[in-house]
Length: 403
Image 1 (cartoon, helix red, strand yellow):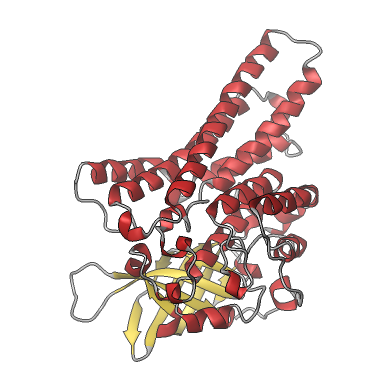
Image 2 (cartoon, rainbow, N blue to C red):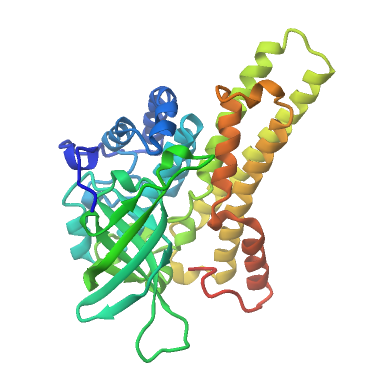
């Protein structure tokens, strides 16, 4: 096991700020951007976020946007989570990515039984990384479950004191049937980390592999995926904000494509400054660049608006009132948003010229990071688009498509 060190989740004694409005959240995120830009190179060299980034975002309450107020959060909702993620990712893509995942999982953790929530938030600065791609059987035992296996791509895990894991559970007597999907909450002391995050993009996210050796997870630290999706999870007994009984696709995964949008915004800002520096001598080549810049900007603006529209429309409607077709559409739109951000920047990067190939160029870094963000399995276009079409046409889909 890795020894717990002096990272902020263990050493901060201050309470995170509780934010009253969306505007305050955006203002605090924007105020952090100069510091985040200064640390981008450090994040890439470390291959995880600098502790200063984590400390700044914890103290400013930006990980509490989906955390219940009764446990020190702001519970401002997905619109704030989406736009704060975009602001942070436009300065440091890796910070934006980790912010998205950590913040979204606060909504999921608010679904857990009361006992586990009280345990989790007894430390007001608790952070939870996650895994949804796992191997190894999760076996039901008396009082809970045992798991020996691995989880992959646990972003920000080095800084966390908890792990959330989405796992399939095979129930005795249900051989041949589909597994039960369940979320587990596991303390940092119960797993080890493999330092294997060597990548071309999002280098600072530290999305490493975790290993568990016969770990016991008590029943109270688990929830069924179907209870979350039906809006009937046990945490709703104490967390009464409507967003906690709404669909996960408008809350938990609402910001999944936001890092790609934020990276695209950062690229567009850098490209705009490049155009500005050359605008005193406009020729045919620069005119082409301006036209492409306009098109790429419109592409990003349009999917940003769609992302916020879905969040605003469905994030507080009881899950039982939202059809499978709507859930599938939300998932389709998330994939479309990430892929549109990627396509917009790839389209514009073609006009970057040789200077954008240098490692010192902001353009190449944003280009690497937007492609890395859009490569996530949960944002890959073809199978998600097909899942939406099958749902619309009442064709049998993969049971995991809307989990």
